[in-house]
Length: 394
Image (cartoon, rainbow, N blue to C red):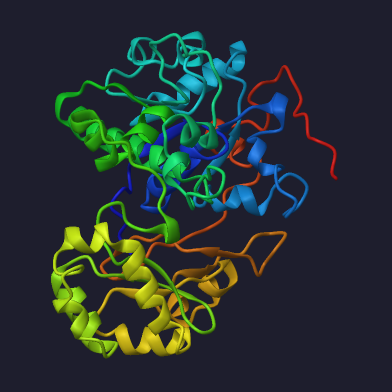
């Protein structure tokens, strides 16, 4: 496979989620992503921040976000480490970091500093709150952003406590937002010869995910709240329904789907019911409609409804993690890949969701901690002043 980012070189000072998730896409697409890891901390904390260990200083958690990357142990605060870092970026397209907002300037990794070495360099800064405000020095993580940005007020049932989205969705969205800005700036840099700073933050991305609920409030003062059954905020029936043996999700987003659904369940009279004739009337009478449909759907098992409705309507089962990954369709489309690890030859990972010319992107595990120092820097210990401090094995 000819990967589209072959020849792109990224140097990344990253850890945990947002930065690594985003740069993983670049690496999977063929870019050379060089992961700078700090000798004094034993590298990216994600290497050891998981009870599912892979060797002495590695984890399944870490490999989830770092496929196809190279690893260099480098203390950019030391004289020797700084020299090696500058050597790495002389021919690089970009430097990425997901540090606190006050750190890039202190570490000299902004465009103002790095352009003296490489005028075409693009510097992507992913922080918690940004680099130019009163919160620049504050640490922050995904779940805090879901809380403060109002997303938890939209998630879960109204009679329960506020809930976050299960996985770290703001980390993922911020990583991908950053990569969009980064690649756009690289295209410009390759034309003009001049790079720039690109900034995004977890907080800004979290606010952006409010979407139309935010627009409604800004313009009409409407405060959107949580709805039962994971319902849509303005369309019904778009929610979970209980069959005789479990749950499924159905989305009648249009009048067409509503009419088809009523016919397929054997109750075409619902279409003519004055309470359900329009999208707005169905939403305003959602509780009543839910009760009516519940009584019908409880008569048969989930599989019946998925098979019966699925060829004409947007409908799907509500699965747990195991059911989702063991789903034959998941495997049929190649979303599970074997990615052997030296300590776990049978390691499997969820595949990259992109395909090029119908082919899944190849995945290999990230290099071991500092494994690429010799190849990239010509030395096994780029610092020369401090030894790698490895956490004790648990």
